[in-house]
Length: 418
Image (tube, rainbow, N blue to C red; front, side):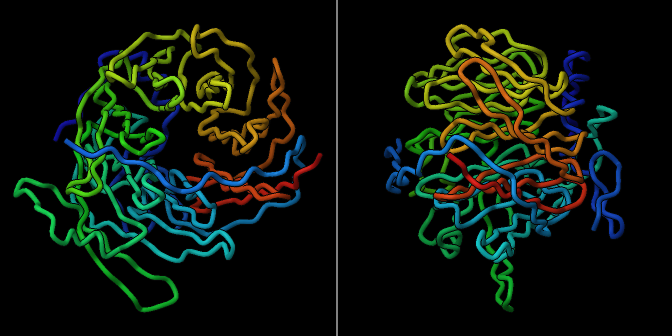
């Protein structure tokens, strides 16, 4: 398989600056190599979610940093994702070709989903050339249907896989009709602390070349996937009662490399960060068609949305974050960050923004004011931090940050203050 070359060299260059990881070089015994060549330390029914709304947390206006804990993960961890209750965290280990399931309370791995490797073609983001690799390289993930389904993008497999995490036996597909042409990926599940092992095969749903972010609608009826090298976004309709559990129903072309996606359910639209350019694309979720392009700064990577509908974006190349008017694209306010801001996430009250800064090895925290950001913390996080998710209870907040080159997760603890 020959991965498409990118026609616009300038866009490719800017985008490559943002993604020094993820192509998936061939695994070796020792050391394990990253895709940068640097060594890594060893007719469907509508679907709805029924998990009750989380009880409102007590209000707070401040955060006080207290400590950092370090949890061992796996090589090349690319992203992390909490379930809706914050009891379990899933870590996508790109270079390890696995997914770790952590118990948040004990900070320990309880289960490992290990992919069987098959030879494929990866991408070297430094040389902009295809390289020999393996297909099963987890990048990003999304939980749906009351946290029953984990959807994971595989960097070199041109698609996503669907895993039932609430009932592993459901991955045996009992009673399902599986087409002869279906592509299946074998997973071995290792239960930590016991000798228990199981294996099953999950469907690969083709989306496009180098799939990245997966986002879902609130009802879990649809998924959106950004396909880096295909210059498009796949729209999938989910059907959890029938194999392969989701089907591509639309493909939306984009002008350059896409990455971040956020869904605005209230206004029936989605936004896509055009990382290879300088725009956000809005999509009409009723017809799954482009509405318009919003001009922003260059190299937008990640997007989140607050309760008022404002967009927040990280600009990897220029080292900034911004608040954007979703209707006009106007930049309302910005702030400089440490070098190469990657994943961003809002606190539950939408008053704080957490930013992983890759090459500068920092986690930065910003207070969101009415018309400005205020940096309240810039904390060391060795190993090129890339993914982050947040747990909160009544009195504290934890930011779980995965570092790509060390295979570790840093848990930053904050006390809530009035």
